[in-house]
Length: 297
Length: 273
Image 1 (cartoon, each protein chain N blue to C red):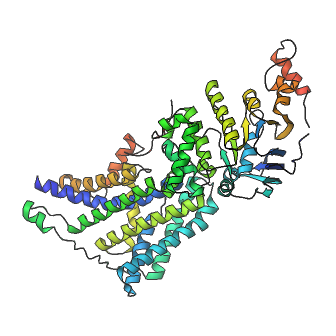
Image 2: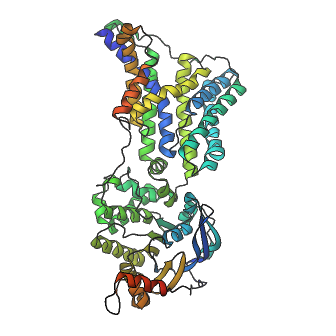
Image 3: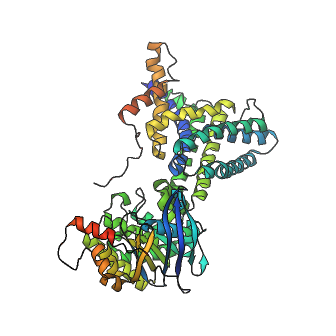
């Protein structure tokens, strides 16, 4: 039983990391209806930029600030050069544009900072919590716990931003009805820049946490693929969905690996979430928290 | 027949032509003017160009691939036909769209607050403005916490109007306020429009298919047909005009006719300018 909880908690904490990636997708999808394929590339770009500045001798906080600035600039130019010219085009066009954008961002990142793997030290050790180890015998990583704390804080900040501020309200308004948002005087162009900036900020936090764990490397871009089952489970429009979806994916893949894996020869961790998502699509295509259209009867 | 806007026109539309998708000609030279503090009704059947006219003024056309290709639009003596919608809202021109378009997943109160987006007003100011809107729409106060998507059609129309009011407009473009509402609610909405017009000195340009109600509340009316203004005049005059009575109010002077005859008659008696 103790082993079960160890696996479960470890999985949930890993799931938080998936949630973070999915969060970036949800933000942009909600505000502009665009499935941003470049989110993974943004994570990579943000982490690599931070590490790059650190290797140039900048202190950690300055490197993060500069990376944040770079993400803001990226948001600005994306809106100007990609979204604005494609306004009113079908969703699939915008989706393909973000695929192109992903390659572009990956290219720029590696051109600027090189393609080698960088280590990133956030000063949080990836080792078991001794107190927990001593008292219950469970092996839970300190890093995972801190990462979850950071993720929770990030989500709390976003929730306040969306519900209590004027800009947050405008973002939700745009997500609901573009036309009406225009009619009340909300500038869509500005909102898009803001939402890409917020997504860039989320990408930076994600990139730092994943980078600290696995090293800052090109493989970070594949996180985008890991976010897919999370989004399908949780629903594309819901922040809560991204969180819960991430937790489900994290916990289920670890549990499946441990309990079902041995019977089928192991190695199911990497594909189990996709199978789960596929099953989910058949039963509840809008996801757990996805928006069902509000229809008055 | 179409009136040349007088110099004192608050809102003046001069001979505009609107083309959708570069090929579909919808407005073929529409001119109208709204004097300050008045309610002007834009009447006509489906597809006559009422909504397009309003959207041309508020510049929401571009989102639908429409474009004003000829003519000018002036507000308070200033050209506004190239201004983006948010700049127009800042100038005081707000559109309430056909079908209400409330933000379904926002509460009624949040909907109202988005209306004040362009003003960047402080918390105290917003609260005061909310109270004012609730003064006009007491029903909204009761429903303030409900998601707008779950409120009734009448409440949504009130929310949409209240939301426009939060921008402190001097001119509201109101598109088809009666759509899908019970006659009693329609009456209520128009009462409020009249009230706002008198107490807040908001001018209105309203597009309406319900000619009967519109002419009772408006000061002036324009009748659109096929993208052209075919007639205009004081509301009372229009309501008394025999052709308007027959075609738009359904009151005929003579004996009953079969519909077939009416159609024929109508085709023959085109009152084209």
